[in-house]
Length: 202
Image (cartoon, rainbow, N blue to C red; front, top):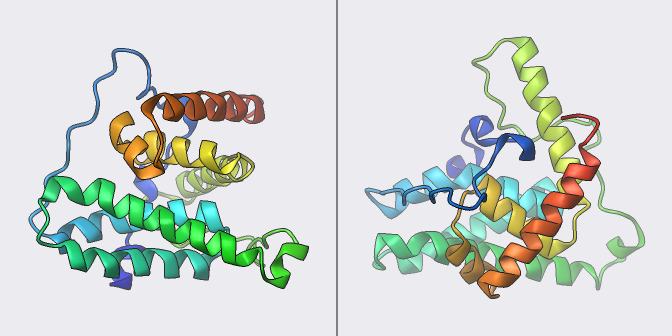
């Protein structure tokens, strides 16, 4: 199952300025069709890992969270395929929140979440493009992920699910356990904060 998490996902990385999916009148991306639950997990794994790592800021914890969510999804393989997306993201978000809460009872609260010792990014880079293109993608993701990590939890979730994962407003609201209006508010505030942080880079 870890193969689902470590699959290549570099092409899914986009900076806020390059996406307009939430502009009024923009069509919602069509629902993906999956041949099986295993196909669904293979497709969602890399993006789920990115979402978990942004929330937990520790690679091992992120891998554990995604792995647990995938295992729990096996209990729902008889559900209709159109229910898998919101169900999986709800399970994963719940696992992330649980991990964050447990941390408050450990000594980790005394220090900020550590960064990778070698400064490297998660291993989802695409080896296809040349060195310059890979460097540009890494730099873009590094700047974006650092900016996203500074957002409040709800803003980070709304931005990641709506913009990076391209879930529609209704599904995002189901995942976050709030109303659609709250999703739009959190997203608007997240975008404003990210635009301010990334203004000199865009």
